[in-house]
Length: 234
Image (tube, rainbow, N blue to C red; front, side, top):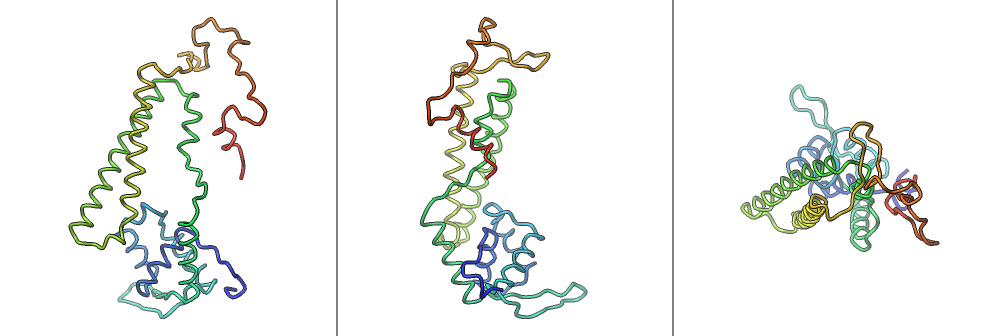
């Protein structure tokens, strides 16, 4: 099967698995423990079931191969895997492909931002402030992990993703704080909602239905690009 697949698919979790096996042979349970201990679940979604499935798929593609079966005490048998030469090539090619050219990743937060006007202003402010709290916690966690790595003299090449993630968190936190302040101050026009029915109401109670309608966008433009993207099934 593997020989017939010239360009095997290498998912983010498969990258993590192949990189671990490039260090040394491991069994899937050890891979899971190592990924969690290194906090790599911040980079890829790590679940035992999906990890075992990924290892099995990599073996089918001949990117890894089973090397032996161990049993310790009453624990179930554990198959140890080793990366193959083909797996090493796939790992390096996939890393190079990702680094070489940015591709759209379609994060979900901008979708919600583009539709935030569907929520009453007090609710939107509450939710934004909750997000600020979570971002501040994650930023502190990133700082703690970087400090731990420096204190334990971990070669920086192994944790260069941390300052990158921290920069993203800091940028988002600064933007969300600024946006929240703008919304809270009244500088940003917002829709009004009937407190009883929850339906939208005119801003000043004086707009006619015709006045409140949005003019169609010019040819080739979209009124809400985020909405248009989110409706695209692809």
